[in-house]
Image 1 (cartoon, rainbow, N blue to C red):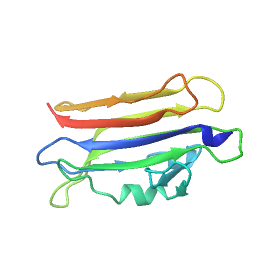
Image 2 (tube, rainbow, N blue to C red):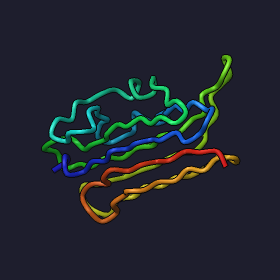
Image 3 (cartoon, rainbow, N blue to C red):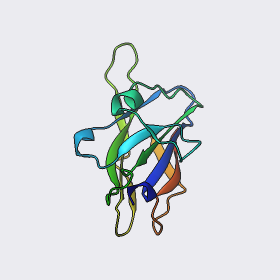
Amino acid sequence: MGWDQWMLLRVSNKSSADTLKLKFPNAGDHWGYPFAGTGDLSDRIEISYAEIEDKDIAPHASYAYGHTGRENAPSGLEGTVDILEKGTGGGEAQRIAQISYNCPWDGSNTFVISDVSAGWDVKSSGEDFEGNALGSITIEVSRT
């Protein structure tokens, strides 16, 4: 049921000087839950969105987390995540792009990158639009 709907999202920071952050603007509206331990899908330990938002993605580094539907529930997963350039010297973080995804219990999957800021390139690979799961997706973020 719900565990058939999942995705692993790896954000890879290809910039040489910028630190990235992830932010979930509408976390209360998300279906499913985020999880750690992306190496083994049989053990989906729920984590909070705040735990993900606390992570810095340093230059030439990456960070991964999973998102899954609820076990034994006829529901999928749905969410939105912003990729931010971490502000320096107390400055405010600036949004680079927004990612929206939906992996319903029934129907087609969607994965959209939108609102990419000028001077940035955000590419994805690995999405599965046909199967139950969105699959293992890599997002590469770089300066243009």
